[in-house]
Image 1 (cartoon, one colour):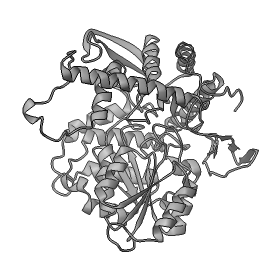
Image 2 (cartoon, one colour):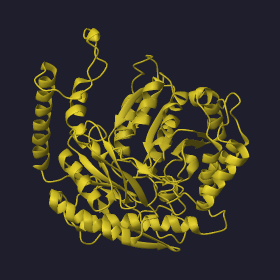
Image 3 (spheres, rainbow, N blue to C red):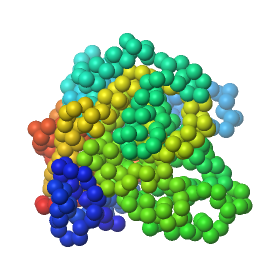
Length: 521
């Protein structure tokens, strides 16, 4: 499936018009449409070879599991209590075998402990293993690396500066804990302030904040739909959304990734029948999509989904965990990126952890919807509240991005992130790597396909003092392992050029050039 990328300079407001074949100017906006497949496929034989590779690994892992079980070899694998041998196993035997004998070998490239804030440069605590990954031991030293593993899109992750000062001031003024849930004694003047700030930033009537991004989805979706409802969910939606759908009890239908036509087709088919859970017509329909998909780097085709929502009178839920702050001339997310009216989106969810370097999440929308969430959400009834210093960090960052601090720092951050995203993707494609996602997305997945290659890729990049994310099963399909680069407005061109040089060298060493060289985009 090809897609259109709408390019804009940062001199004005993006209106999202598509222009066929070439460029058009609208005021001081330059728009250009380029057709590229956001998830291109490698040569036909690559998946066969990857399948052979993973099959051999799994056979070896199963043999090792049997040898351990029979006592032929001894490992540090967790053993169950002999008295519980007759109990039904709690886990999945495949996942246990995969974790013990494949994932374990790569524990040095995941969950790396850091020392300090995760900015463009971060300090890693050095580790080593002397038992094939069963345990990791600290050397007592630290390494300074270029950080491509954190979601510090706007570069607000600093231990000093106006945001840090505001957070410290809130600790002095309010402490660190509000006590109780929002429906009890946990409501605080700081919550009201940050919710008003976020609502104005999103251009919606109201907003509500929660202390955890995952729970913002999983605890709130059940308050919006029930077993008599229908959910249309993108195939690649985040686990928090999937959890929320399951907890809601609603009938969930999955549609092809970022495909509004397939969504409409499955919606139409579902509406021709009745709910399999109640035997009656659906009481409401909720379409759930993401702004930027974190493992693919694709940007949602928002106008198309809004059109489906309006045509069938559905509710639209937009998860902007990775897109709020990361796209749009002022970082207001995919609605601003496409030039859509935010009020056409019924529920706008986002996290405060990534672009704003804090913690938690928010829900934005009409006052009626947000008041409903306040009353019926498990998060407001049973959950804790957001801490005041985290609120201060968010408020200050949002004020900067909206330009209400009296500077153009926010605008410059948005420009820098956009330039970094386009430049880095273009250079990777020039070198022949297979890269997923849209050009304006700061999430850049480089496909290695082999689990063995993605692990080695990460190890060799660390030797160049570059920290990256190596992603494999279960976060991705078994045959589609990838390196994921998370770009930041704090990355300089010198950083990116050094990274690209290292990536090219490691790519040659590991044989990961699966794309077609694209010289001019």
